[in-house]
Image (cartoon, rainbow, N blue to C red; front, side, top):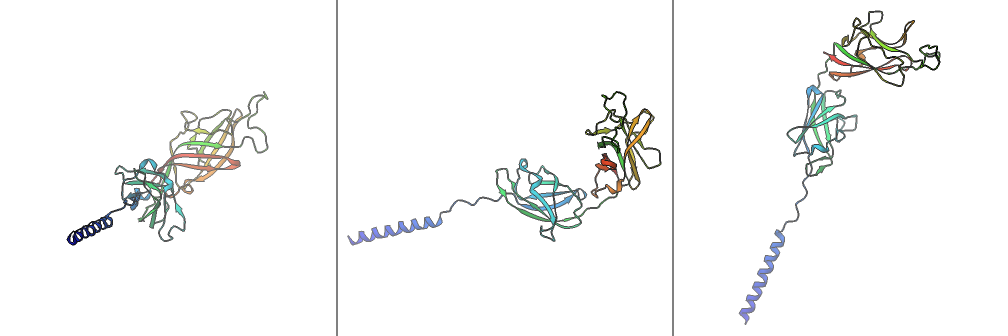
Length: 282
């Protein structure tokens, strides 16, 4: 009888210990894996863009430019931060190309910050950083090929309040018949445009044709440093009347960004505004 009791006690202790060991060896649920984190960044395209590479695949459909910022590594993000004009997922599924809104970052060490970039299964990393060396070689243009000029604003009336055009029938609109000329002051125009009749100051007008087959037309190449005169002209029966003008140099409009296609805003007298469209020449 005593022998049986010892056997029962031994069995109980053995089973209990085995049960305890099983509890110690059990594993809880695995912690969730973090979302995509930056592993590297670098300038590409001569400094006009930045590539960012992550440690795992990313969900391209959720990417926005607002998820990325770049700043000087020296101020740890306390100074000015630059954003991006566009973000494009690369074919490898783990990297993106970010086009800088303002490439004038300045050469040196910079940090890229990525926020809330998602994986294909929805995991996100609140923030990750990657340092990189930024270098850009700014080119100086030699000129600008003007392709078209868009007038966006001009005064509805003359400075004395009278209308631009005279019409014996009072009910007819007394609006100007406008065209533009582009030239160096005192020189033969490089461009004399087509005309819009009864033009309204509340509309935009695109000039991309010549007044006639004998007149200078777009495109033409303007010098980088020369001062030019853009004039808005009222084409009257009694002769042309210069309405407003704007003086500018293309060198004052260049953004130090190695741009190719560009839109140059121009402003002048009495709220005259226009945009010169074209291509930088290097």
